[in-house]
Amino acid sequence: MREFEVRNAHFDRLFNTPGLMWLGQNTNHFPTHPAVLRAMADCIASEEFHAYAPPAGFEALRRGIVADLGLDAGNASALVTDGAVEALYLACHAFGATGSTFVTTDPGWKWPMHFARAAGATIVEIPIYGPEHDFRLSPARLEAAVDERTRIIYLVDPNNPLGVCYTEAEIRAFTDIARRAGAYFIHDCTYRHFADSHTLAASFYPERTITIYSFSKWLGLAGLRVGALVASPEIIERLAAAPPNNLGSNVLSQRAAMAGLAVKDEWMPEINRRQRRNQAAIHAAAATVPGLAIPVYPSQANFLVVECIDAGITPEALCEAYRASGIMIRQGTYHTPAFGHRFVKVSTTVPEGWADAFCAQLPQMVERARAITEPGPLF
Ligand SMILES: Cc1ncc(COP(=O)(O)O)c(C=O)c1O
Image: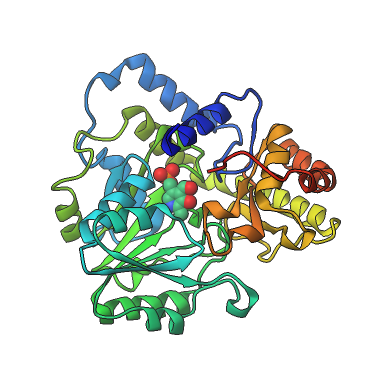
């Protein structure tokens, strides 16, 4: 079978596994806020979904996203997309020209690299994994990687998978570098709502920053596919001219997103309290198993990197051991061929019982992984 078919069948199998504990995709599995459920039920009952939504999204949702970011509505405009990934696809194809470079970190999120490469750009990855880099990008190393060919700087912040989040001084320095090069700064803020504090690049470089926004993680709407990009009205005008989906995003999803924004102040503190509690439980469990380590703690996102290389097991074997026990975690190679053999990633926006099941089984799973020499293909 071709690789794509194997990959699709893999995710189909996972989705259709009853009771699977999803600790691998940073999705949010806490029960949905009743107001969000009600908005969706009303949408279905009224059958309003027979009509297309407005091409850039409902005006109220567009305003709500810009307001949630705290950006100036006169200077920033939102384009609602089918998840953050469509926003990234659009921006990478629009600006990743042949002969240009696309500069990002390793590790980071891999799909935008595929998009920019398909558009003709050359990918430049700056390694940030390791204590020698403090697991983060420094302005000096970004400066060294950027030149006049650079059209896009792509920063995942908080970083997936590391969970580091950049300071205001760092963001200022990064945007100064982008401005000097005339590059677009794609600031992927998919995980910003989990950070103790977060600085938007758009505050310092509004003219060429594209802020990527997702409802998949903080609100838990991954399967509903709704997100956005936020940029200057000029950039939105250009991107809205030929988007992949000019018939408007899913009406049901947008209703859920709007209801979520309305209850966000009540919803997020509790979500964050619970996911940080899960982080603490996993941190404590890993400390009891020789060879395991958590290099970034607490994570500013809803997941933790758990290093397993010094335990003498592969990430794939550990994932396979857990999968057989009904728990999905993610192997590091999903994020980075260079460093992926060192770690697994474990998501924390899950019911406490799931995190505790992961923790309770950790010693025995590490032992079981030692015997797994040929795990099946993982993606
Ligand atoms: C950094 C990053 N950006 C974007 C996405 C995709 O988000 P969405 O579900 O909104 O398309 C993900 C999903 O894991 C991600 O990790």
